[in-house]
Image (cartoon, rainbow, N blue to C red; front, side):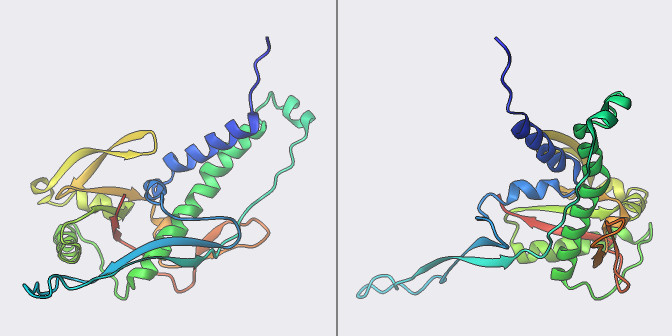
Length: 246
């Protein structure tokens, strides 16, 4: 009996897996399990709020409280794509080197994944309100990073997990810091089905990212060669300390 394979579904599944495991921001995918998307140009993200403790009364008992659980709506800002036409004769003449699977995989690796990373990091940088630039130096980069880690942990109270995404040139300076041995270890970091060996600073994973993907703003081409490039007023991002909740 001949095999029956749902080619389209298998193909799309493998492409999705490639993005999850190939993007330096792939770990964000698994952090979006509660986001609701039903088509169209909007997504809904849950948020919860409640009051703090009140004074207990022996006569009145507990102060009443209320839990508010709602969804905040965000509008999608990008509608990106590209169509390639591959003739069956072209595939045959190139010994299947031009097969759809090869083209789609290479397109995602060289074009789609870098743009996804760049867009995500630029939006995080904008949300963080980066207003000044620090020029990394081997002698000061560790102290600057630890200072910012302390500020973030002071706000989060140590709950949840932190991830640092860092521009590759800055990452290299950090690894060459004279004092780096005091607080850097190697650990496994899960991204999709992959377990990556990454460096940690005070227990926080540090993910190196190509510097071209670490800018505060980008322009996204609508036609021609397409792709993306840093906006004219873009600033370089040294690192982003991200707070994650599974």
